[in-house]
Image (cartoon, rainbow, N blue to C red; front, side, top):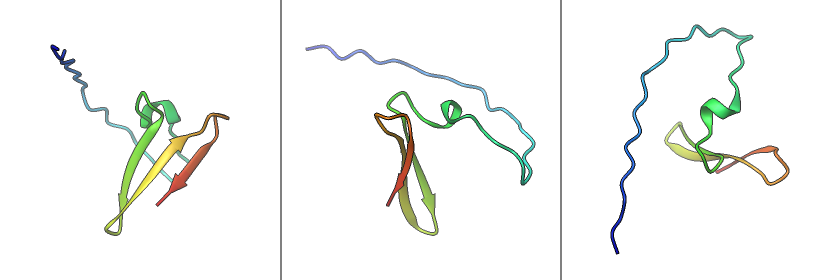
Length: 58
């Protein structure tokens, strides 16, 4: 069986953020609706549920 490889490239964006900034979840979550976050040496998973809600788990 042959595996196909897909190359994805993106250019970094510079954004200015402050205490009132918001970011659309579509920019953060991958195609599976997930984002791994590292904080204070721990890994957390932010994911979109089947009800289109966000949940953060350790």
